[in-house]
Amino acid sequence: MEHPDSVMIRYIALVSILAILFPGCGKPAANPASAQPAPRVLATVNGEPISDKDLKLSLAIRLMDDPDFKVTPSTKNEQIQMIIDERLELQRKDRASSDIKIF
View 1 (cartoon, helix red, strand yellow):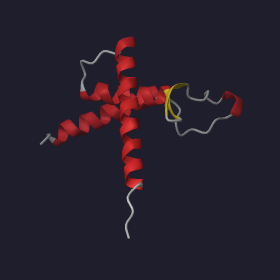
View 2 (cartoon, helix red, strand yellow):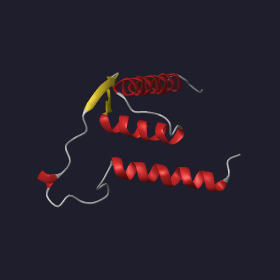
View 3 (cartoon, rainbow, N blue to C red):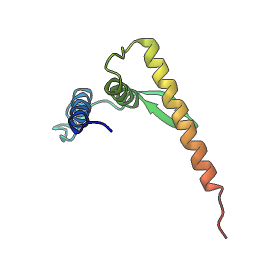
View 4 (cartoon, rainbow, N blue to C red):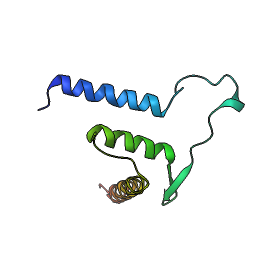
């Protein structure tokens, strides 16, 4: 079991990373024209988009789990593939659960 201080440090690190990656979240835009652009779609999985924000969040979590992790074009591609695989698995499970009929 992890020491409570270790858990708190990881939580603070995640919040800090997210604050850096997503500045201004929760603040209403003063002018709709100045609002941030829509997320860029990097891939789709059966019509479900995977955006650059999904990638940033996934990388932030990975950096929290492994502080020695280095973000490179290659590791970004690996991370996108991991997100795709996770989405496919979730869609597969969702389809399987929707096929269950209880009488």
